[in-house]
Length: 304
Ligand SMILES: Nc1ncnc2c1ncn2[C@@H]1O[C@H](COP(=O)(O)OP(=O)(O)OP(=O)(O)O)[C@@H](O)[C@H]1O
Ligand SMILES: [Mg+2]
Image 1 (tube, rainbow, N blue to C red):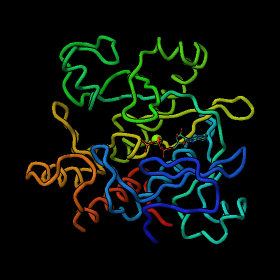
Image 2: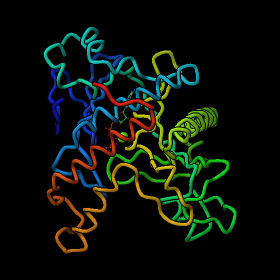
Image 3: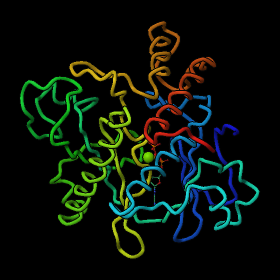
């Protein structure tokens, strides 16, 4: 399988994220294509990580299938041949879309990142350590870093066009999308995370926190969209190395982060773009981590 930094398909490109390229198929459908780009500390690296795009797309596809009957979702197909059968314009681009593309129902997106945290980590730990609160709500005293939160905490954020998403209170979310949709989005978020966290934990991965997006389809239904419980939208930890009271290594990006930290400490990188070139050993170790994440989550090797 070829590795890809950027895609160029014969469809209107309507967006480009740090990792994914977004194409319009028609008024009802989108093609989301995960390249092999990788970012760390908010900087996109110059190298590609072989198989990363396929891992991301196929982990999302695994979850959409697992959630069948639990929530409505946007996936039509993540199979290249099925996609080509339904979008003939892609027939000469099978190698470009193989494994990494998902054909989706197009929706009107809620402008809210539905974040749910089952463990106290990252910015949530920083806030708690400073003020004893999370998303403005007071938590129990004496919690340690990375501890399991029961129940999990729903902490929405607004989708920022540029820069970092801004955490908002649930009261603010009600003002933005209304009481009924706030209730529905929180309930859906909890149902999806509860199922995912439990299934992943049985397979040796802790999904410490994650972020979902939802949209309204043509029939007015609220459906799960975007990517689902991937290493890019979630914090994945190895369950066998989990130890509360300290930060946990990141399952997928730790080799990359360790390398970049060392470059920074050595004064060879200032933390901004352009990033330093990555040695082949770091690229290789990172690719293996993504493939291992797929294997653990789904219980099978990724076959493309
Ligand atoms: N079914 C859908 N209908 C409409 N828009 C969707 C659907 N699924 C995903 N999207 C949108 O597609 C975009 C995917 O972009 P992507 O995640 O690659 O980049 P980003 O979120 O802008 O940046 P980042 O790289 O930080 O994630 C998001 O804006 C998401 O809301
Ligand atoms: Mg995104």
